Structure formats: structure tokens, C-alpha cells
Amino acid sequence: MWKRIGPMMPVAVLIGSAILFLSAGLVMAADKSTAPKAETSKGPRAIIKTKFGDIEVKFLPDVAPKHVANFIKLAKDGFYNGTIFHRVIPGFMIQGGDPNTKDSLKKDTYGQGGPGYSIKAEFSDMPHKRGTVSMARANDPDTAGSQFFIVVEDSRFLDNKYSVFGEVVRGIGVTDKIVNLPRDERDNPKERVEMTVTISE
Image (tube, rainbow, N blue to C red; front, top):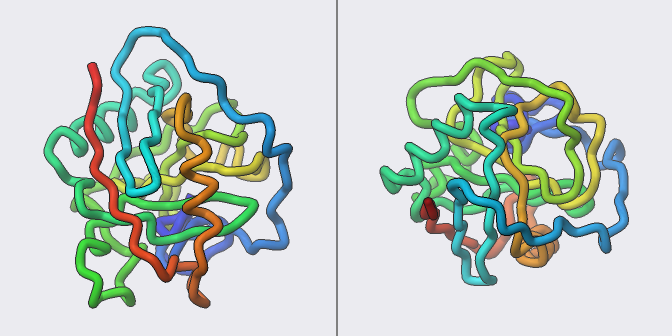
């Protein structure tokens, strides 16, 4: 979405001052009952641990191989540990993965951090439905790095604009708890929700 889901400058779709996201008015509601079903197929999974519970993500290497490989590498390196979900928009998504969020005293930089490099976009026809995991970016399509967002309600206006690389198969209820936390004027939750990300082979 932006690095604040989307662009690095408040843009229309991602999260944060750097990443973007569309205004709340463009959000399209979805039936909250249509949560992704747990799956048992083989393949690496990401386990995002939070104080509200775990979120299990199934990767889609056939759709976005470079983004999947990048996320797995960063997770194994411990890059995401201690970062927070720094942007929450009810009826839309939650965004995280910015290393700047490890410092609670530098909120003005949230949404602007990354791994120091970017990945070429891998847009596809995969829909941004409830449970979709996609990469945040700036205005330039090829600026995704480490920030990602999880869609909590169908947001098809993002299709073919952001690189979908995974889907939640367990713990979608955890995202609902996070997205509904009280937030400030920049959509930063007032309560820190740190994550620890591990890869289950």
C-alpha cells in the first residue's frame, strides 16, 4: 500500500506519511464474515506474533517470487522483530514493517523507513480481498522494500497497483483487533503493537 501504504508522500493509497493509502472515503466495505479459511498445504509460512495473538501468512511465490523471497530473508534476519503496525485504518487495512518504528520517540519518521533497497513491482490479477498481504510503496511502483499491509476488508481499488505476495490463513481476527485500536490524526495507533516474525518451513 503505502509505505504508509503507498507512497512516501501522503499519497492516495498507502499508509503513513510516506506510503500512502487512499482516503477513508474510498474504502469499500466487505462482509467481515468472509475470513480466509485455514489451509494445510505445504510451503513456508510467516508467523507474525503480536500481543493480541498470531497471524499466519501463506506466501504466493507463483504470484510475486521476488517479494516472497525478500520478506522471508528479512524475517530470517530478524529485521521485523520489534517493529510495529504503525498505520491502522478501520474498514481498510493495517500496515507495518518499518524499522523506524522500533524507536517510540521518532513517530514523525514512521512510514518512511525500509531495508535500504527497493524491489521491482510484481503486480498481478490477485484481488485485494480480506486477508490479502501486499507490499506498501511510494509513488514509484518499484519502491517497495520492507513495509507491508494486511487488508481487513475487500479493497479492490488497489488491484494491479500493489504487489500481493501472501494471504492470511489463520489469525484474521487479530488484524480486526489491531485495526480498531484508538489512533491519532496520522492513523498511528496510540497503543504499540510490536511484532516478531518467524518463518515456518
